[in-house]
Structures are given as structure tokens and as C-alpha cells.
Length: 384
Ligand SMILES: Nc1nc2c(ncn2[C@@H]2O[C@H](COP(=O)(O)OP(=O)(O)OP(=O)(O)O)[C@@H](O)[C@H]2O)c(=O)[nH]1
Ligand SMILES: [Mg+2]
Image (cartoon, rainbow, N blue to C red; front, side, top):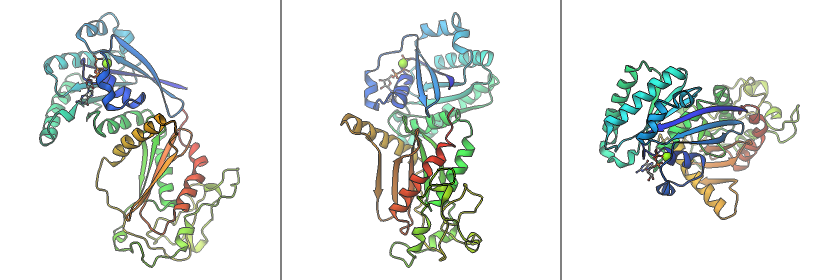
């Protein structure tokens, strides 16, 4: 089990405890108005992906506490830090003082934990009007970058966040994925799975927090947009090709390990635009294509760069509502004329979402592929 010390710092009332409670303690945004100021340091151990324990130090932001953080407790606070998350309140009435604290924190971190990764959140962005939001954020970002450079801090990430929208999920997803080893390996397996399912997108969410930990997208070939839509002349056989065999694999792992192998001819058919042709080296083996070159609908274009985090936010709230009604959220399927979206409990510590716009890929094929991929992915989702 790996424990990682995470320091959460920033001025009083900037929103530190609010974001921690929403991400890790199942609060809704509106519940945070009832939070009291944090006195001194609150320690919380939160589990992520099963075995990764984040040791969160939520440091109360009142001036009196900073005196002891910087003097008496300096080493205790700033030693062995893996992640520093510093929160600025965009509506602060004393920005100069915020920067006094910030520079003190940078100095103490450089001295005690020079390898700590640093994330800076410019928070409560919802309080800035939409028209001005980007300009004000960029302006604040410049000042922060200048301050970091004054202290020789070169590697850091800055996010604009709010508890009232998906930006909070976006920032925290990036923060925690930084702590996951072998994330590239997981991504490459997810890419292959996306191809096998002929999915447009596949996203992995951490089970407890619903933070996005990995995602894969189909490469969109120009041809996609020329292909047939629903009701086109695609062949039924293409759907069958997406199935992974439900029979047991060589090592007892059904599905991906023991899926229908493409014939030599089929394997060479790299001109297919459907993603069903799976190179034999990808995965241990995978579902192969039919003899017919399949055709499918245009991939649904991406309307929104923040869609995954919005989904995190919405589905997590729905999951919490299910809990309140004494029901347990298992998954959901949403379908319209352009695509089907499947969200399902996946491995012990994740949920998966698969988006499919190809009307010839039957629901059963996608569900079976998800089911058959579970054991395979259990091996690649790190247990830390
Ligand atoms: N508008 C807005 N309000 C927020 C946001 N995040 C938190 N708040 C509010 O800010 C107030 C203070 O939040 P806390 O989380 O207690 O602040 P804190 O940084 O932990 O404060 P200390 O514990 O005193 O250091 C609460 O009323 C929250 O509802 C945000 O993104 N937007
Ligand atoms: Mg607090």
C-alpha cells in the first residue's frame, strides 16, 4: 500500500475543504456552504484505486495558522510532500497577502520537499462573469508564473476551478493521475479496447471519486464521414465481429484472451475503417473482423472538450442519489439517434464508459466486450 502526502494550502475561505469534501467525501456543492473554517491542520486518509492512500493535509488558511506552519511546524508540514495543491480565491479581497503566503509556501517546499509536484488552483472562477473569465484567469496565471520563477520553481500546473462546474473534476483528475504508476500502459490497453469495440471513445473513471483516470478515442479517418448512417447497407456480420468469445481463455480469463482470431487474410485487411481489425499483437488476442469490409456511421463529432468531467460530475451525483434511495448504482445505458453510451461498473476500482456511434455494433456485443475485458484490465489497473 502506498501512502502519498498531499498538502492542501491557500488562504482562509478559498475553498480547500469544499473541494476535498466534494471529491473524496461525497458532498454536493451546495453542502459546502455549511462547512466551518478548518482549525489548524485536518488529516484525512482517502483511498484511491483501492490501494493508493492519499494522506491529505487540509491546512486551515487563517493568518495565525501560517505563523506556525512557517515557524514552529515548518519541517513537520513541509517534509516528505508528494503533492502541493495551492488554492487561490479569485475574489480575494487581499491578493497581495495571498502572494505573501504563497511565496512562503514555495520557499518552504523547495527547502523540504524539492521533488514535490505542484498544482495551483485559481478557484471560485464561477464568481467571474463568463466574458471576463479567460482574461482574468490568464492575468492571474501570469502573476503566479512570475512568482514561481522568482523562487526557481519550474514545474507546476495551474488550473481555473469552481465547485459549481466540471473544472473541479478536470483539475483533480489531472492531479491524481500524476500519482498513478504505469498510466501509459493502461492508456495503450484502453486504446486497443476502444478499437476492438469499434467505439468512438472509452473512458475509465475511478470508482469512488468518479475522477477520469484514462481515456481512448478512435482515430477519426476522413473516410468516417463518408460512410453510411443508420439504415445504411452495412452488414450484420460486422456486429458479430465485435464479440469476444465468452468461452474461457487459456489461463481461465474469458474473452479477450480467447477471442475469435481473425484469419490470415482478415488480419491483413488494414484498410478497414471500422476499427474491428485488430492486429494480432494488440492485446493477447481479440475479436476479429468478418469477411466483409464493414461500414458505419460518421463518428459523432466532439462538441465539448469538457464532456468527460461533466459526465463525472453528473454521474457521481446520480450515484449519490441512488445511495440515498437505498439503491446501488451499477451502470446505465443512454441512446439516441447518433450514439449509444454505456457506463458500467468495470474492475474492482473503476467504472468504464463506452461510446459507440456505429449502428451495426449491437448493444449485446458492447456489453459482452466490457464483461470480457474486466479480468484483463484488472491486471493493468495498478494496485499500488
Ligand atoms: N462561489 C464559490 N464558492 C465556493 C467555491 N468553493 C468553495 N466555495 C465556498 O467558499 C466557502 C469557504 O469554503 P471552505 O472550503 O470552508 O474554505 P477553506 O479554504 O477550507 O477555508 P479555511 O478552512 O478557513 O482555510 C464555502 O461557503 C464554500 O461554499 C467555488 O468554487 N465557488
Ligand atoms: Mg477548510
